[in-house]
Length: 262
Image (cartoon, rainbow, N blue to C red; front, side):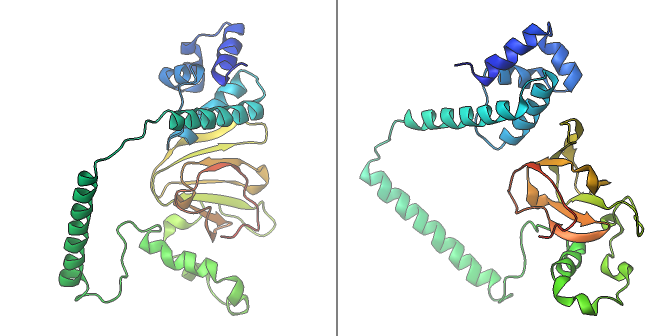
C-alpha cells in the first residue's frame, strides 16, 4: 500500500517537477517537502503546520486533498502507536524511587513555605496570572460581548465607542446597514494562521504577530486553520464575539458564521 510520501513523490515526478520547483512555487522549504515525501513527519506540536503544507502541496499536484489529509493523519497516528510499542520498559531500583520521593517532597515543602511567607500574606486572593489569555485592554470588551444577550434591552442606548475603547480591536473594514457582514480575526498572541477559499486556494498563510488583524467578507466562507484557537479574537462587524476556541486548541478547516458566539 502506497504511503502519502510515495503518492506525492510519484505525482511530482509525473509532472516533471523537482523539489526545488515545488519549494519556489509554494514558498515551502525544501526540507519540509523532503520530509513529506519520505514520510518523515511525526505527531508533535508542529503537526498542524505540516498539515497546512501538505494541503497546499496536494492541491498543487491536483490530488484528492481530503483523502490525502485523512490518509496522512491515519499514517502518523499508526506510526505513533508503533513507536510506543517499541519502548522498552525501564525497571527502576526502589532506592532511586525513594530518593525521588524525598526530593519531590522537599520541593513541595519549599514552595509551600515560600507561598505562605511571601505571597499569601500580601494577597489573600490570587487575582493574577503569569500569561493572561487576553490583554488587559480587551478584557472589558470580551466581558461585554459575553453578557450581551442577557442585557439586550439595556444596551440600546450604549454608544459603540464606549464598548470598544482600544482602536486596535476595531475591524479594519467598516460596515454600514445593508452592506456585507465583515469578520475580523485579531491575534492576542503570535499564532500561525491559514485561510483558504471554497476552492481550496490559499488566501493567507503566515505566522501572525500579536495584535495583528485580518478582515474578510463573511459570505466568502473561508476555511480557517490555526495553531492555537485560544489566541484568536473574533469580531463580527466590529462587535467582539469572543475567542474562536480554547487555549491550545488546533483548528482545521473551521468556517465562521454571522451568529458565531463563544
